[in-house]
Image (cartoon, rainbow, N blue to C red):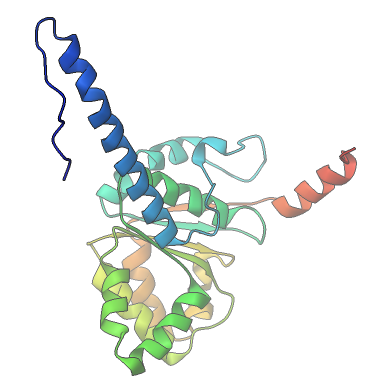
Length: 232
């Protein structure tokens, strides 16, 4: 709670009252910035500095500029729609996902980011030490859940059940963003059991935007550019 100002407020010409409001505005802006930074730290995005304004549309990666501009408005999260980003290794799936999460942060959206291997590493011991309900709530209550780097390893039985519970709990209540090297049609290979695969993807795909990236690895392109233009 802000402390009251001790300065006298003079209203003779209105300028003093306006001037006294400046410290309050600065304090509010400072607190909002601190809350934003705290949310960013807690989300642990892989690319903290990723920003949609920095997207390079000149690279031939199959980017739909109109779709990205639409996603930037955040309406897809308000409407509780999902987003699937697929493409080969190195084309910028994770970076793009982090940029969209960054945009969501700016709109004060609660975001949880997890690489899929890390998610299951957290969930497995949580079943035995009593932390699972709390961890499950933190994942399912977020307005945007970002599941990065899905595949190519096939899920085991416990992972399938946990993922099914998460997807079911979030269905119609929040947005889920997935990045994967594998196409959607490979869902049976990813999940490892047809019944679970159809149940999980049915809840994700039917109201999802899909960005399918293509082209060469950006890492290789960057390395090639550095070789051609060495620093002196």
